[in-house]
Image (cartoon, rainbow, N blue to C red; front, top):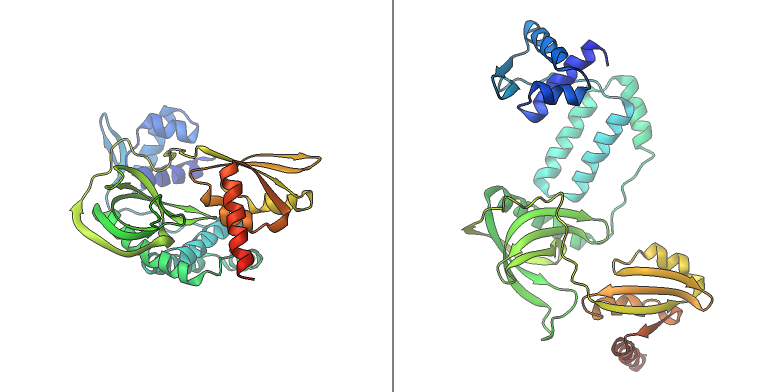
Length: 316
């Protein structure tokens, strides 16, 4: 990295982090602290409004922003694919922002870079599910949830569970403190929130939320909660075992079922072990394999599969 590149990198680091010490900058750029001191003097002489606070570090004067910089083809493609993802998956407000950002990025690309970027981007497509009703509900809910998170307000909604509770009820009303959102390709958007009913952090599929409103009650996210490092408690304690026809091994692997714990190909078939909270969570999925699967345990779930098959036979 030459001096010009290093000076640009320093400004970009300060724009991103607001306040950095000389030691932090030296470590980030792989140079000595003495070099950072010289670079700071050079930036100041060039008119960049660097503020040095004794004992705290360096920062940029509020309002200063680095003019647009050039992108490589790979950088441009990455940014444009990111805006496309947001346009496809987020609520209208962020969708408009992503569209505006994409136009600005395209505007500053040089003609050769823009042409090559368009060529590469045209060969990459982000596929979406065809469940348009669910996606529209997701996007509508996302906007309300984001608003509530920004204002630190609780939300109330009706939640439609896929598997009924022990009392047979699949629908209940929850009031929660929304801590964050996570996206999963299998499940779509997930809301991580502290549930007043369960008095613990719970996950809710945004597509299963209806009648969503923001309440007047406020909340404070715990200091020790970090969405990036958070891992949910695994309360799946029931083991289900099944043997699949060897001819469908590739299909079973492609299905990538969330509950799969172990797999092993044997002479008599493809042995798969699942770990679930309730066997009912697997019922529809297992039945979908027809005669290509046999449940071996637990006996109670084998009986449940038999019951469902009998019900199906009566309808045909």
